[in-house]
Length: 203
Image (cartoon, rainbow, N blue to C red; front, top):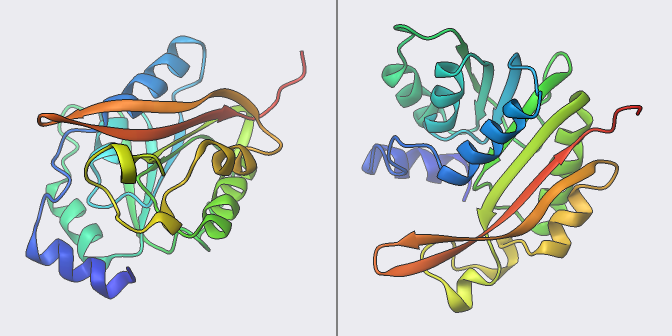
């Protein structure tokens, strides 16, 4: 889907993803923080209407939240509130395949970005290059196995990554976790795939 199609979808169905961040992303980021990741600068790439960016900001992160849907970013800004939080969000209309931050960051979160595999691998490698030493990259998406064994998500197998695809995207990084993640979806089970990696540091 291109930006105009996503604009139409967000107009037709605001809060299409709900307002609660994905539990697996929350768990991975929280675990990284507990292990010593400094809470400072983050990118939420392909942020949609901002559920992960708002959660990050509420927990002290300064977030650049990027999506190529102008409608999604407008909706995100409208929902945004800085009441009582220590972080902040800069909402940016930008293409995940070409946008880059102005400086290195401590965390990149990519939730449910689905592209052809060549493009997704390139996005992941680019994102890994944005990290400061010891910075973390967390990607969560619908797995290729979800099409046959799970429920929901894209029905196009060419945009559903497998473990091997994400391993290619993690090239040059230290892999923290690379696995399937089973998620309840009503009475069924959705099958996601997780990449959590970090930039190498001298030991």
